[in-house]
Length: 51
Image 1 (cartoon, one colour):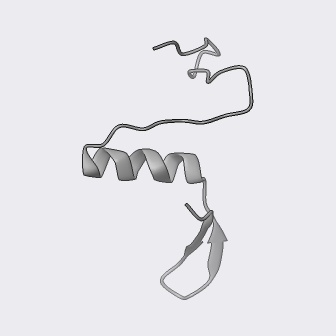
Image 2 (cartoon, helix red, strand yellow; image 1 turned 90 degrees about the horizontal axis):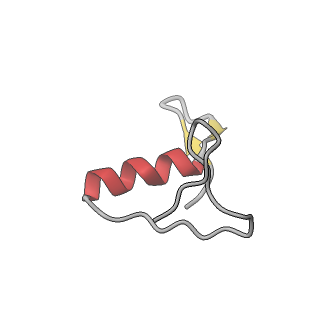
């Protein structure tokens, strides 16, 4: 996914790709697979998410 979006007036803006991909997966009813080079993914409370 690109982190560049376009406004109605044609201006380009930087978007948060993580949020964008989550919404796309929700719309497609698809699973999201996160690949990272860090020691895990944390929730809003800072706790590691384990599946």
